[in-house]
Length: 463
Image 1 (cartoon, one colour):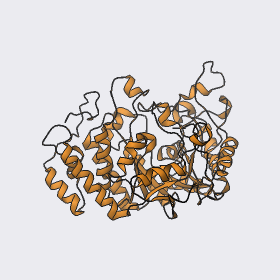
Image 2 (spheres, one colour):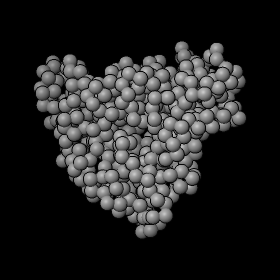
Image 3 (tube, one colour):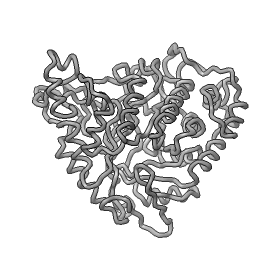
Image 4 (cartoon, helix red, strand yellow):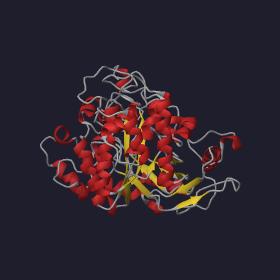
């Protein structure tokens, strides 16, 4: 193995490399027995053995089989999915992460800026209208992950605090709404707008919570409690990328660090909010970094018990600064994707649900990953943009009939679920057409006509 990721890229001199004193055979035996794995065990499984170069196909299948067995033992054969909408509020952001092509530098949104850009900012009223329309289709989860717009604040008290700085833009990344074409309002206003009509609002990553408390001494718990009172129901554990400082120093030096991310997640759970957890892999990191990341997640879950699912996100490299600057040449291989899901299932012995992302992987590979340890298949995603803007090929709308057809094809039961997994409804493949039933306005009606039925195209993605 090299010091850079097996997916290719720059030769970076990392302290942490995939080199252990453990053997693959011992690590596999522990995984099969259900013993708690060490980081060294995880590295051996992720690499299919550090005693040889490359991924060994026979050993890989042994890891995948162990993970699939563990999945069956932990959660059974059901493949779950949710009826959801993505409503990202703004692409304005000054963080400058090198893996991102979703955001636009914030000065482009200022009223006196003369150039064009492809970004957007929505007012709270516009966000409310998007959700209201989607509720009529039967969705019940609204996912919202947005850029860190300089005018975005928690509430009016927060705005007054930031206004009091001598140089707010330089010191706390703040400019008043009057400087911009569109005012995003406050986080509290956006939460109230998007939680309308009984929708479950899944929003406010630790990075966004940091933005909502910048320039103050407020705790994450206090911020999340106010957001919860405004309608926030659960938190996406994105902005995690790789939770190892030497990797974050390369790909996102302007972003919150590992300790801050963990503190934000703990604050959300202390406020009574469930959270997901993610990893974004396949760029400059190596297998040791991936397993170290899993250890951070497992330790966090040991302390809190609030993580409902783990979501591996394979890096989409095209159109990103990492690719344009030559730091990466490609994303993760198919084998790396399979091993990431499998080792996550085996290592995270305290997280029930592992997701396979058809937005990232497409249909064929995402279905394969359901046999590598994953049990959740995302959601309908009526609007999605992040992956698309980075050059991803997938991310279109997925109907319930699509889910039933694909999941049934691999011999697994398709199951509609709520965001928190506490409500479930198994769908009968022979009793279609299928639509959501768990939403406040859902009655089983198909959400959108299938393209082959009406000659139209799926709803555009927003990822």
